[in-house]
Image 1 (cartoon, rainbow, N blue to C red):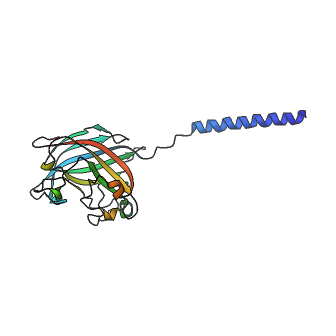
Image 2 (cartoon, helix red, strand yellow):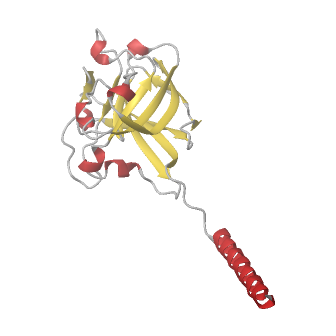
Length: 234
């Protein structure tokens, strides 16, 4: 009996030592890297040119546009603006909008969403809120346009037209019809269910029912404010 107790005691000591060693090992392991986007930016660059003008749901002349000054809106991991979150934009100006995003390792990842056609077919950007008068609904081409406009995927292959664009790169005008009170808007990058992207038109970017119309889940929601004025930059 004493012999059995001795073996039991040794086994208990061994198990305890093993548990402690395991615990110490676990404590020394690095924490897993958090998934998702740690920070993001939207870079607004004013573009101009004799041939740049709005027409319906899109712009003409962007290929020959000249870039002017830029302003960068910075966001934290929750999509809250930490810098330049209240923009004063020229009502009739056209702005190039570029998304930049970083994961929790510090890697720049916005091009991962448009790595190739198969990947980009899962994503689309929207600009939600603001109660905009859209340009197709304007009597004199003075409404808002948000036009995703990538020309190539990250692998270098060509983007095949308006239904394939994503909105990592886009162009925007707020229009004189939308001058007045500050507008609260959200840039949304949405991961879509299979086959959904092909049904999204250029006039769908501001739909309040986008979550039900285009099933999927939001990857990014970047919240900021826009105040459209005449003769006031930023």
